[in-house]
Image (cartoon, rainbow, N blue to C red):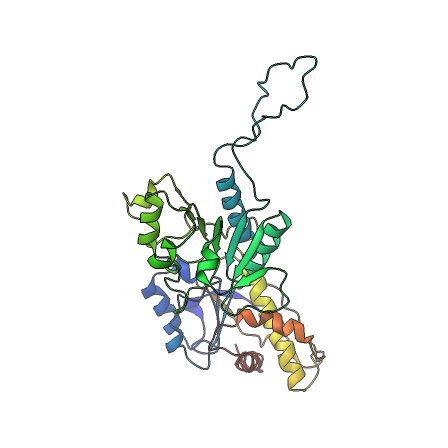
Length: 362
């Protein structure tokens, strides 16, 4: 298996690794039209860059659904803690206190914590229950926060309080937006909803700017009714002079919450996991020659397709385990389903992988 520029891809049946956020809309369209792709894997967690209504039925579309969960959750946690301790940390570079009197207690009753209150007992709503939301809720819970999860369809047995009520979600100290951008979530937090939020709510957005009514958020932050930490804005970057740039109630970062030591090539792990799991599921559903004797079942064989990359030259293609003829754990298959972008289904995905592993494909 080799990584090649998209311009060198075969006219059909190639696999495209695309970083959609690094391309203009016109450039994305050009790349997608340049060949008849069998599989397009997005290096992004979101698929809102793609017109799903026009997506060809015979092309597998997947996304990097879990590899950025850790850095995004860490960013959100940092944002929440920074806001909690915005009036000052409890430590100093040097201890400037006077020597205590011989009979003074070691810690005076009125000793200051620096003005922060911390997370213990804070009410935090996590909007979205994907990989980011699940990791963040677990961390917040471990630190003593009271976590509420905003979900369209709450499920029984969750260790966290769940709600589908926007009013309940906005009645919190912090709201972390970790939802995908869809027709149903666009401006979910609109002017009316934000206007009903608990005064002083701190909104953290690590997802997409369009999920929140940015104009309404700007006005409420300017009035001192809300606070915000935003890794995403519309547009990116904001125009010079935009009020969000100068409001003391707002913190901005340039869409970097996903970055960490290992994030630049982390999408490759998600891609490899989807490939290996679907290939194994297909080989078990359609028995044939074992992988040990049939080179067409091995992605490392000379018949494996070339991988075309549109924006990350030098990123090594991951080693993908050869699919086993043994039936995979059903939980392993379930685990990669979030990586399949509708209208892709599990059945269609397995069929696409089977086609990719057919002898003679290049």
